[in-house]
Length: 121
Image (cartoon, rainbow, N blue to C red; front, side, top):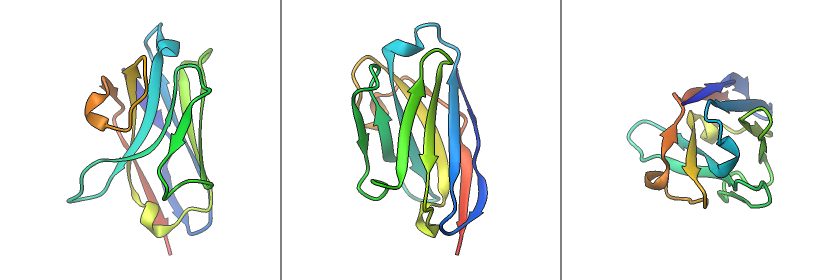
């Protein structure tokens, strides 16, 4: 089970941090990803972090603005979002995949409940 927190309404250029806490005792064995979805569109990859935290990957649209990190002692993954833009407006989901990471949302095993991020211009 993944429980998300954070999100909300901000203005262009501001920052937000999303959190996602897992209940699985083996959280550290899971690669974690963040995805986002807007109405009428498919869920798209945002960022991922491998179970060892040495492997991260970002969508081009968020590179250099978003940072994914994890704290395995707290079973939590974070998405720090800086310099937010209106096109970042979406519902954001965290997801967990056992072992190796993937950009494909269909390969993830568990999903958070989603949290709305709205960036006003």
